[in-house]
Length: 202
Image 1 (cartoon, rainbow, N blue to C red):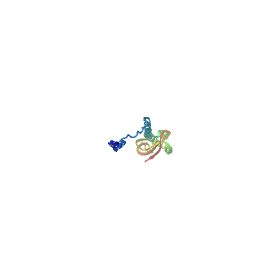
Image 2 (cartoon, rainbow, N blue to C red):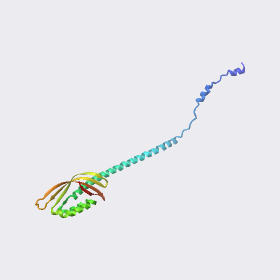
Image 3 (cartoon, one colour):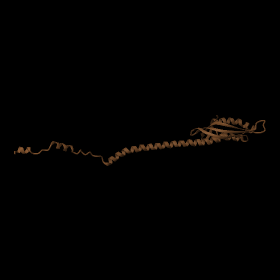
Image 4 (cartoon, helix red, strand yellow):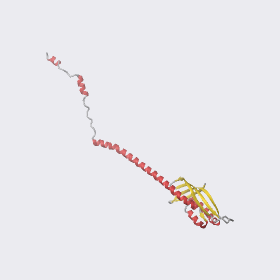
């Protein structure tokens, strides 16, 4: 056998084997960022979210507190105005001829604005009339309902029984009558006090 025949008889690697070796080669390693860098990135994403949530919570708490304070203020205004109205109505619609000047002065302390002007004009006529018939008038509030309420102004509907005792001319005995009244009263807060500013019969 010749040298060429020996060379020809040498086994050779199949080409498919070389392709498989190329396909199974490992991909190049991609470097990953250090742990500290990853933590900084996570913090950079979390912090804005936390801030937004904190602001939203603070705003919600503020709105709830504001609404609660407003409701409490209105409730207190209603309570104070109704109490003052009951007192004012009794003073304005009641009088006793035996102390008429004192009753008028007391009633003036409970009213303001247009009602003060109207009451003062009526009181001037009442001064000579009440003693002439020995008039004693007593007003009693039988009920009330708030129609509209603000922090410094409250309007309400009031039911009042006005009892009058008089000795009419030519009669020896006293006459008594009770007049049921329905009035619309407005109370206004002036320098920290609730005063009657409008009174209209309905």
